[in-house]
Image 1 (cartoon, rainbow, N blue to C red):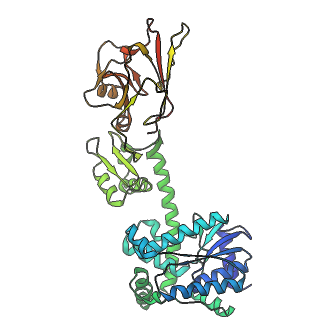
Image 2 (image 1 turned 120 degrees about the vertical axis):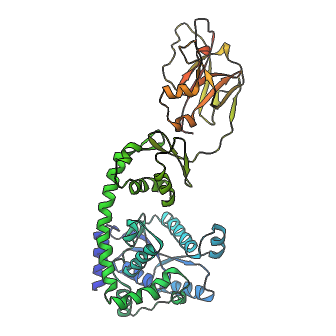
Image 3 (image 1 turned 180 degrees about the horizontal axis):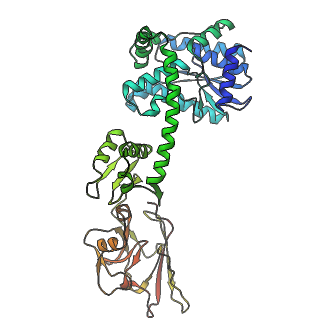
Length: 447
């Protein structure tokens, strides 16, 4: 077995990339990297399903590439799947670059093949030079410490067994094997950022330092170690400062303010929720602002409360109110609730669960209205003979802003009968004179 094959086998084992002799999807474009990858994995006795994408971006050259891969797989007795994409249209519809469109289309299809063939992984042919280019791209475009660690050997089901070898190693392997490959003519064009880095920037840097690639690879390895230490530190701080509760995520502001590098820690906490660096900078600069300020990512909403930042999933829009008719036994939206009508028995016991309301049915007027509370609303909390503003009730109960926003109230004839999940109104309580009971039971409070 040649040196490069031994090196790849060791790299796969050391990084726990694949089980022995498993089935894998292999991306094969026809270029030197992917051809070598297919041959090496075959030599290591993995069962390969080759996958080739025709993006139709280079006219006849795209069709030439597909034909080459078909012939290669036929000669090597490898099962091949091919697909054609209208990449330009996809990029236009999604308003993204051609590069990003091709990447999305490729990896989405690879993942569908992995599921179809129950493969362990998707293998792609990124190598040391690709990792260096990614490192430089990230520096140019701006990045955190994770962006300085190059390309990872494993990302979900995608694995990269070639990150331990260079483009030179790959071409030398193919030359020894006497195996041909095709060259993408656009690799020499400098329209794309990566090509500019590969064809212009790196050659100039190599004039300054002939060992540039070796030096950068060593730096990436060192930064990977630093990144691991950084991630451990951030994880520790996350556990100290933030926590999840009742479908919300809380950031403790007093604890956050104690940190010298609180902006960096806050960014790492908010990043998984889709908040961008610029947004986090604004949030960090307004930690002392009054409560109630909201910020939004594409997937989440952040609310600044008195002592917390509260993050929730973006809510779907609900109407302002919902009717409950006398015939309804179940309410599905916005709260899943069972509605039961009972005759009062002498042995009836009122449940103490706040998610269950037992109301005097003879005092209720249908349709009942479920709506959100408004400033100025008042009710008679159970056990009290005087009215109280709902807002004051929330203060007494230490209800945070997210809970206030998510609280519904049940009204009968314009009177509040129940602050849902919290307290019923004393005017609608069960008494000795009650004959009919309306029992409402909340099955969830997620929305």
